[in-house]
Image (cartoon, rainbow, N blue to C red):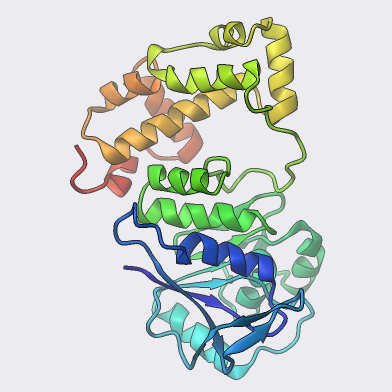
Length: 315
């Protein structure tokens, strides 16, 4: 079981802390070996949040019992870091344990020197301040999160959920991450390179358009194309393409490719089917086409993905 510490401190962000607790501390009996997660503080058993609400927390002296540290937010005004927090997190990092930040939490990681030689991001409203304070750090604009397997930073607010789902995906599986997202009534796990700005509407539930997309996801194995989906939506191909771009800010072709890749990843993680059989089930013409898309989107082959994420005991 992975033990997670969520760092609390006076005037912390309530929303980001709540995101961490909802994703990692909430019991999920449907999954084996789920996380143990605590809201912790150095020298406090109660902390006031940025909205005036006080939280009861676990007072600790060090982080030795934890495997993953989440920094939900931090001050952006370049104030000094308390010595006990500095030494504890530095020791934690030197043990090569994972640390992720949400939103302004990247400021703490940067001040501790943990982002040296790494990429970082934070909420777009803090981007100029971050780059001014930490000009030596490679800053990524307009992404949801960056994560190299040890250190991760998310952009503001809901992007914290996307980074958390990436942790869940890596620890458990792609399917588990998407099941958690569905339980939270969220879109499936989004990749880090997507834009921080999400102002386009999603398809209306129960509409013919939305039903056509549901049909497409259920019939990937038939090798469907965009014309067929447009026909299911009772729309011309031109109108369908226009509506799709307005709703999702991507083309139908890109969306279908991502659905196929998601289906393939799930099968690579959960089954022992051959690469060619998985390609067929996911709607690719054959294994070479799937290999091309994996290298294009993920920089690795389907075999490498399976080697990294295949669940033991999968059938």
